[in-house]
Amino acid sequence: MTDTTADAQARSTDGTGRNPAAPGGGRTVASAVTDAVVARLARGITAAPDAATADTRAPLTGERLATLPLSTPADVETAYRLARRAQQSWAALPVRRRTAVLLRFHDLLLQRQDEVLDLIQAETGKTRLHAFEEVLAAASAARHYGRKTASYLRDRRRGGALPVLTHTLEARRPKGVIGQISPWNYPLELSVSDALPAFAAGNAVVNKPDTQTALTALWARELLVEAGLPADVWQIVVGDGPVIGPAVVEHADYVSFTGSTRTGRQVAQQAAGRLVGASLELGGKNALLVLADADLDRAAEGAVRACFSSAGQLCISIERLFVHRSVADEFLARFTARTRALRLGGGLAYGADMGSLVSERQLETVTRHVEEAVKAGATVLTGGRARPDLGPLFFEPTVLDGVTTDMAVCTEETFGPVVSVYRFDTEDEAVAAANATPYGLNSSVWTKDTRRGRAVAARLHTGTVNVNEAYAAAYGSVASPMGGMGDSGLGRRHGAEGILRFTEAQTVATQRLMPIGPSHGLDDQRFAALLTTGLKALKTLRFR
Image (cartoon, rainbow, N blue to C red; front, side, top):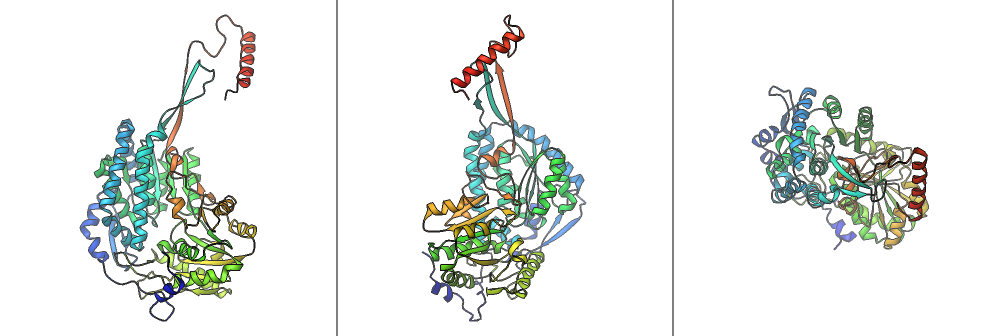
């Protein structure tokens, strides 16, 4: 059952128009992420005993969260050496032995999810429900590749050069050691869900998570080792991207990168220089379209999820709302009421609707985009303010109207809880405006006519499109590929493409009875004439 507009308005209790604070309760960050927990997890970092260290801070409180050893380029080289040695015996195991590890990890993750929910919240500042989305996604990926890898990787019979005489198989071999660079915004999902298919395919992984969220990745590694993964098969290195990122790419047999478009270009160039492949999920400026026939309550509720999950720090979240002019006022009344009623909070418990930004840098970008837009003539329908009363990095969910194309908030990725609204008269106009960006990651279409929604989806230049859902329907369909077009990236995660990218295709052809060349007394001319006749016959008989 969805909230009505009146229900949503009633949830804002302070009378100032500010978003209400969520009820308190739950454990503190300090009590959940103790020095003992940090020390245990940090042992999973490949770094020298006398390594330099760096502190991370809890976004919810600003207090020191962890002190972590930093890896050097030499440590990265060591990690690859250990991983490469371990990968050979791991790849030699039958597929069913490797996938059994993923299925055990699935069960352990669901059983012990509270541990990682605490870590995700502590490191990112997101709400517990949004942290649970990561558990859900990682478990789904583990189940999918645990069940489907054998099918994805099985040898496939292909048509041979000469029917009957040539027996041809397509086989899949592991790349070797995958270099993985994962971001801070979804530290469990974007480290584990990419690593799992790599492991299932017989690879080892050297992963550089963002330092801010390294504890979550380290916890996931610890759990996978408990599930049966050989410890050296997953190496984790920690350090600043410009310092050790190039070393991760330099030694990799394939690179998996999730992050900004700017850094993604650098990664792609370095990988291309070494003639190794790369998959890149990069930035987005995602659009949501509300058509004239949409269920406005459902659309408003979905738009809130689309725009403000994880405080908008989600690559596939919505930053541009396109609404048919005939329903714009009604939709905005519903949407802004729900947005204004979102409860902000940072307790390590369920109950808050939106959490904190992760860093001062994110807060500065969000503040700049909003302030510059307002100064240039945009109107704040709700939000628009930082909330230091709740924590150092809280910013209210913000809806802007009157945004024009010369404003940064219209064209640049904000990566925060800010969305701008635009009205349209025709679907052609809406599609053209939604596509008027170099990005192409995700989009959302709302209509009561699902056939119409799919027709509009086919015209949108994005790797995923959700009809009557924000982002979870497409992303959660783990059997189907997910990734971006244009400046939003290369390659796909999930589905067959999500695991085959970590393999090399090998063709094994066995010739029988006679060679493909002059034999049995045929000279060159008679051999050529025979094959010419054969080629014509194969076409006539519709051989492929």
